[in-house]
Length: 449
Image 1 (cartoon, helix red, strand yellow):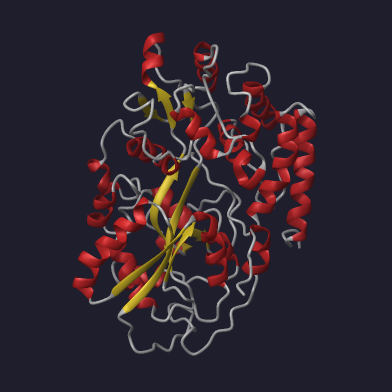
Image 2: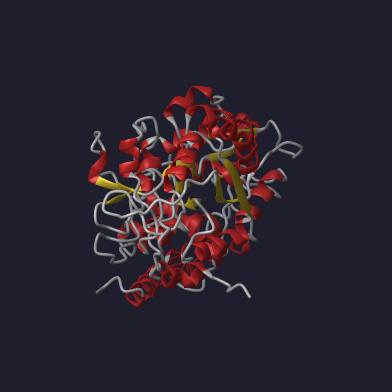
């Protein structure tokens, strides 16, 4: 029977030791590797999305004829992907030669448990050009030397061509972010431009809200990281981090209170969002927008799906989300990584080089957004992909902390935050309780020595 792996078991699997066999030992940099007979077939783990079927077709038509290496992409629905990814992480001999690792929810566990090949030596040996990647994607894949966690989820130690000043564990496969989607026709009736600041967001949302119509919408259910995905952009805009460098939670500050008050007031005080928001997940938010009763949302770009055939078809504009002290943009994405237990890392690397090449990325547009600067010229201006790409180009955009217990941390502050959203407790009490809950989770995970 297959063991069920919940997100609450992250820390268990992240810290699990790999028993390294003859074919599982690794061989680049400080690692030793006894190379087996070179394989001519590799298997990659991915989650099912519009990219994977297209990439499989391209691999069959282009990569395999060029290299003689057959590729099978195991595309798993997101609901099962995390379980399968974590189970394969702790295997003695990985069932996968390449793993498409989510930068927030799975890759931190692999890195924390020391289950991934560092790619620095492979990059140098093959003269692989990193300079073409959008910097934010590389900042997700790099970790500070000697570190297995990142408080902000990003690492910039490799900037200015100092590629070896940090450890590269993954090559960007696609990047995602949270652009503002807005009704062009409604704003046109107001004679207004898309809001560029938080004050303008509120003002515009108020003008768009009337009977049966709301100016803004977000996801408010506290389960599975949904409420945190809605709240984090407001923390970002007020320049508030979840943690300091010593892993102390630091969001219960005057700016944290102000950001959270603004967020909660959209629902409680100004009523510019639907009354059902406290139970909405991301999909419900997007689906509600598609019915034509919402003026603006800031969803995950790759989670939007097509507007074709909906009431808002040809009525949607895309731009950067509003700012306050800083950018409100949330980032995510995934990295092509090589498990230490992969049978032949060099063959895995051949596939990664091909899959991240400009030719392939151009063919995958718009599904995978733009992860290479050289593909930006092929992005249709004003499109969703264009908006995602411009979000990805913002240096002050932010990612969740890269920690193996992110799900537990998110749950810890989301529970009291949900009570504040529905008016059961005050903002200050919610943040105070959230910080206490987070400290308990981090202490149990061993972050405080």
